[in-house]
Amino acid sequence: MRHPRFLLALVTAALLVLACVTPAQARSAPAVTASATAGCGSAPTLANGVNTIQSGGRSRSYILRIPEGYDNQHPYRLVIGFHWLGGTATDVATGQTVQRDVWAYYGLLRLAGESTIFVAPQGLNNGWANTGGEDVTFVDDMLRQIESDLCVDTSRRFALGFSYGAAMSYAHACARPDVFRAVAVYAGGLLSGCSGGTRPIAYFAAHGLRDNVLSIAGGRSMRDRFVQNNGCTPQNPPEPAQGSLTHVTTSYSGCADGYPVVWAAFDEGHIAAPQDGAPGDSGTRTWLPAETWRFFTQFEGDDEEPGPGTGACTASLRIVNSWPGGFQGEVTVRAGDTAITGWTTSWTWPGAQRITQLWGGVQTGSGADVTVRNESWNGSLAAGASTTFGFTAEGEAATPAIACD
Image (tube, rainbow, N blue to C red):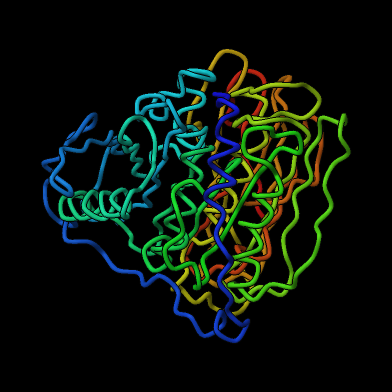
């Protein structure tokens, strides 16, 4: 997944002057509007696997992954994963270049379970030059086809990619901030252009200190466009020391409501699945999918207003996925007959299980005894309402009883 060094020249040639927008403009910009698509309520005709469409006089293709047990009355989150230079839609959909299945859709598929529609578009010549905006138009046409057939929540569309795929995600952050709720840009560069780029969008970026293909300096400049657009307080966020093989994640302060910016710098080169404490890609040990998924899923229920008060809650755990030596779980927390303003769950593992990553909650316990409390954004639940948090763990899959206070 490493790219030829000649991309450095492409990055230099593609540098654009950052457009300016005031914090006041960022705060007045509307968020993506939630609505159900035309496909809701109808039996789908699109199928899992490769689908084709005509766009700009060309035949284009994408791989579609519809959740098992698809419910045409339920609007689903939609995530688009763009491949890197020389990569393919199949590489993204299967994860075979890092670790098959575990790394599908940059590791997000196993975190999402059956909650999300995933799409992997195929770029022309295995890249995303986006000449004349043709690749952005392709995605417009693709979404139109998908959403006329499937039930999608238009307030929860997301895009991510690595390298050239990150450049394409960035192009959509610039050109389609009213279409996508957030983007994640891994080791990106200005290779696919930035048409527009003056409006806010929730922005997550990760970049290696020692990236000699697309420099971290370029990644910082791309980030700073949306620091400004989103009205965040400018800063030089901390980054790990070279040789430490660690990462540092910074959430910017002062950003407009609904438009966070998060920057994750790591001590490695041009890779998509960095791990702490060891060099190279790792589909199972990388921290990046969990941090991305946590960033994306913070936007659940943007249009819902939680009720006041306190009350009882219940919690249950289900196994979303498993593999030799590990598994992924999801815990659902549900308020009782009255609203709650916070929750804490706890359980004890029956064996040698150990949580390795967790999102959607804050873990305070350790070892066999686990305690997880709510994040600041998902603690308030109206009567009967629910939220979820997820985790990956080492050991044999287990579903212990969970207490909720």
